Image (cartoon, rainbow, N blue to C red; front, side):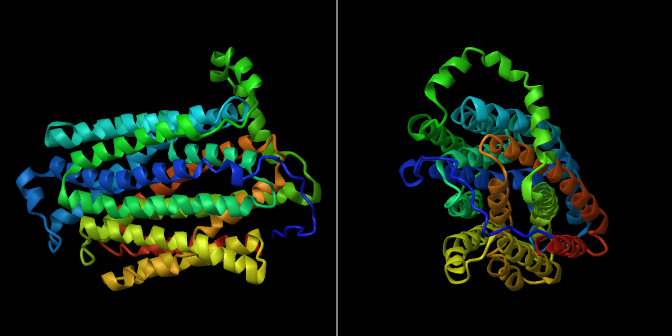
Length: 451
């Protein structure tokens, strides 16, 4: 059980005023805008390519939302397994890249890793662009190349480990939680607009225009980072250390030191609290990632039979509700009840349980569209835990601790994707709702840790 000593005073870790350093928020928005246009587009493209692999093009084009024959079930099973393999290729390299980027950015530069992540997204999207053009003439396994490139340049979790590390340099302990909430809100607004646009663009245009638009957004983000994002490390130190750039590729001692941080002795039993909160965060992420990896298939399947536009609108509403929860509800709760980090995580966990329960009992679109309302507080888990961990760690540890968390999140995402996709492929004929009852139960298991 975790109890934060509310009377404990933590020293400020940065003299840089957050209000004078607002520069990272547009990076988050643009990145998430592109990613959330890309995710549904990739899912739809993968679903199409699986159908082309199993059947001919004319049959795949004839499958409509009311069809419930064996073809749909077979496509769903194969697509679920391919999603699992897809995530394996994506996750394994990103585990090591997250650690390298995290420790490297803590010493040298935050801007360069941010740019590299966006470059990786552009190259990955170009591969998918070619897949969409050549249709059935290319093997479906080429999707693995797309994800491999994405992960080798840094995954989404890598990007946010760098962003949160950067945030610790431009904020103080006193405004850290609010700053994280603003970042999460930019994330949610970007994902809201991206999700809605993805379905509309696909229904009105085609895969090629979607992918070109994604490339354009990442390109704009790179330009913004180069021009407007300021480095927070001393310039003289940067110039000196850049001379030894090649040495940064071999930082095994830094990696080893990063893992040691987790088990370093701390005052007030904070090592135990750190490990407990990390375990709870990983359980929550495992469940959330596993669930999200099969939601597209679940909603596309009869009787829900979501179209691409409807799926995009649903994802957009979820993200918008999360933004409202962070921008409006969280400040109100803090003002009226002065809630601490652990209370945030409890509220977030209960909200996640509600989401999974609604998925599990839903047989109509009306019930599904209640999920954004009940899931409005679900992002409080990440906000509360990240804020709590940043208060435990020293300033010279934060880059490393967030890179370790990012790597654990990647491993977690891999396990969650494998577990949930295998279970879904085996239960789709019997009881596809089972996967969401399992997710609800796993989220509920973390509640005692925060009390």
